[in-house]
Length: 102
Figure 1 (cartoon, rainbow, N blue to C red):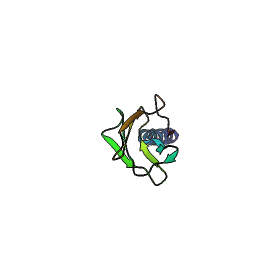
Figure 2 (cartoon, helix red, strand yellow):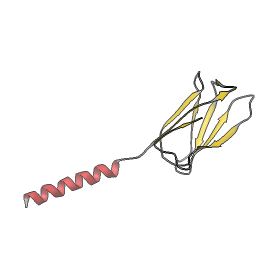
Figure 3 (cartoon, one colour):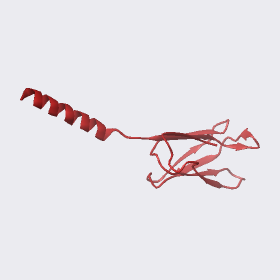
Figure 4 (cartoon, rainbow, N blue to C red):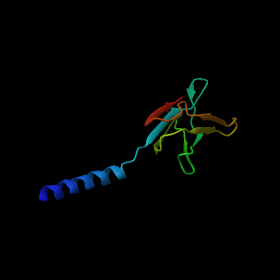
């Protein structure tokens, strides 16, 4: 009887841990113009798997990163004053847990 209770408690504990586990992805990239990093670009991502949008600004070498996002398909929009706004899909149909976009 004690062993059964112990096993039942272990199963409940394992099931509750798995229920709280979440899978997240990361999207990183570099914005370039004529082969050089472009700082100050506003990057906005959107996905049907995410509520709303997430936005960041490229760093001094043009690099950017989005962490903790749900895996899935993404549209990535690039905006910089004086330049045309560009929107691109993520390269993979489903974004893996880590993906670098160029």
